[in-house]
Structures are given as structure tokens and as C-alpha cells.
Image 1 (cartoon, one colour):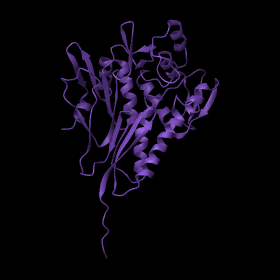
Image 2 (tube, helix red, strand yellow; image 1 turned 90 degrees about the horizontal axis):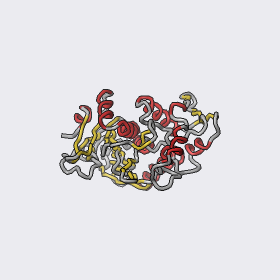
Image 3 (cartoon, rainbow, N blue to C red; image 1 turned 135 degrees about the horizontal axis):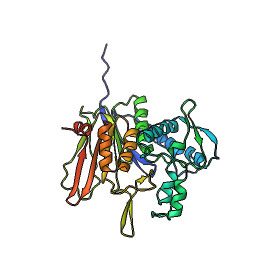
Image 4 (cartoon, one colour; image 1 turned 90 degrees about the vertical axis):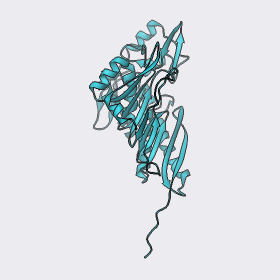
Length: 323
């Protein structure tokens, strides 16, 4: 009897477009694996997320919910339900720093789908938007995955859906027997397993600061975890000499003041990391850092100052840095 010889392993690189950004996957596969079918399977999962949760697609499940009549209950598809349940849980835990019903506010400030150019809305318009239902007005039936449209609630899951998409791709790969991969969607990253040479997936943590020359590079080994970064470097605008962050504080109806250049969160899932990076950014770096320390979150804040950028980490994040 001749012993079976295992196929040599190689590192496949796949990628494409989704959610107005790019995605990529580095996957350990057997040499000669059909990468076209694998790519199509991953793209199909991303298309499923868009079809359910995009604010840019008029026919998405989320857009239909946003247009629905007051008092109507809606059964959400499985992926949408998973994200919605997590979003409401994080909204409660952060006391509204993360709000999945901030869609009207996002549009009012000129961000997101259906918005014009970024700019400060008129006071009366902002007051009307702030009277819209928020996360506390959303009733959720976990059994049956049903969500109530109280009337005028506008969901926006852009601060959590990309993270969920990362997790979904990893789960899709795992279901196909591919347990070693590094996946990224729009900058949110998660890794499982190891590279073909047995070393972990190592990623450089973003700083988000133009003046970060004095900061040491920070590297994480993503063995079975995810990292997401939020901040105002990537999306912001200036008006009348004031710089406004893309990250909005739903509790006060305006952009975060003195937002950290970058807030990175390490978590078991990219969905959790994505949402908490936003929530901590909204809190502001001092309150956010105190919250992260009190709740055991692995977080890093990069803050601009007169002398350049400085970093502040929780013990959990510092402990996770690669040697």
C-alpha cells in the first residue's frame, strides 16, 4: 500500500470590489485549487451583504425597511438579523455612542447614500433629524428575527457591516475546509490559522495621523481575531475654518469634536471590532480610553497634539502586540 501524499500548499490571493471599497483574501490552498470558483463563492457572499444591508441600493432589505410604514414588523434575513442584533447590543452597551438608526443624521451632514456635498446642515433641519427615532425606539424580537419600524427610523449599518462581511468570508472559507486565511474588507482585517510557512498573519496597525513619524510601528499577529480602525483622517471636511469629522455623534447630532486620528480595536470578530472602533471614536479619546479600560476592550488611540501624534493603549491591546 502506497501512502497518500498530501498536496503542497500555496498562498492564493483573491480580491475585488464591494460596498464602495475593495476586499482581499489571502488563503492557504492546495496547489492547483480552482481559484475562480473560490473567488465567485466569496464575491457571492459579499453581494448578499450588499443586497440585505446597503443604504445605496434602493432594493436592499435595509432600504425597504427605511421606507416602510410606521408600526410594521419586518422579518430580517439571517445575515441582516445577525448584524442588527449585534448593533443593538453594542448600542445599549455604549449608551448610544453606536446607533444603527443614525441614517437620517448621516444624510443630513452630507455623508452616505442620497446625500449631497458634506456640510453643516441648517439648525432647523438638524432639529428635525434629531426628532427621528433612534436605537431606543427599535423593537427587536430575537425569536423570529423581527424588527419594528416605529415610523421614520432610518437604519445605517455602515459602521458594522464591513466587519461582518470579513467574518462571513472567513466562515465561508472554513466551510470549504480552508482554515488558514487573512481577509480584509475596506480596511477591516481578520485572520485565522497560519501562513504556509507556519507563521501567524502579521498586520501593521494603522495610525491615521499625518504627523505620525515619531510613533513606533505596531504589529499584531492575527491568529484567531480581528482588528478594525476608525478615525477622521479618511473622511472629513472643512467649513468656515472648522474641520468636521465624518464620524457623527448620534447622541448630540453632530460630528465628533477633536476626534482621535485613529482608534483601533482588537476583538474576536471583525463585526465587534468594527462597531466598537466607531463607538470609542464617538466617545472621544479620553472618555473612550477610560471606557475601554473599564470594559476590558483591546484598544489603541492615536491622538493629534501640538507636538505631533501620541498613542494610548489599553493593557489588552498592548499585550496583543507581536514581539
